[in-house]
Length: 241
Image (tube, rainbow, N blue to C red):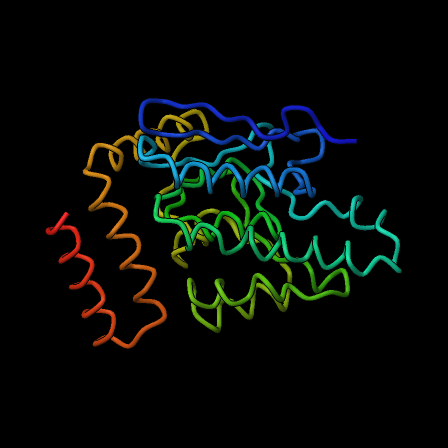
């Protein structure tokens, strides 16, 4: 059964608000929600009138990770369905880096497994003191494999390995120390703070903002010299347009 309105979308000027709305399932990512979220981000990136996206959640949990109930319901002999679901998890963890529109996560509570990966994959993260981040896959006899590469890039090898080897949650304060989030605000101010940050970004010329994000992402995967040259070429294209 597909949840109705599992992903809510609302436009506020040049900002798109996406809200995870399976709060009765702690906003666990099932196939339908993952597909909806991926498509919403692609559509936003193709819409010149959307300059920034905010991903938030209803309820007390940001995202409990992949929907394990749905996973258990897939027959073990349906390797095609298992692979398709795994591919969606890969897409969820990489799509923000591959689009040019900035994406902000507003984390109101626990972000677990793929939910932690979703928030960490966003360009900016605003969190309430109730936020908790954990990668508990090891406790269930599996690996946080698809989440590890970005975690290493964001926090470094030692903290990343501690998170995935122990599976223990960390507080918003510790996540801030590790650079996993940008700002902690009171719970009652979370939505307003995330929207204000998005509106601040949305006021800039979209070409420059998108180019800045693209150059930033490219710099991750290039030598310093190549990254500087790529950024120069991007600015040349902006000036010529």
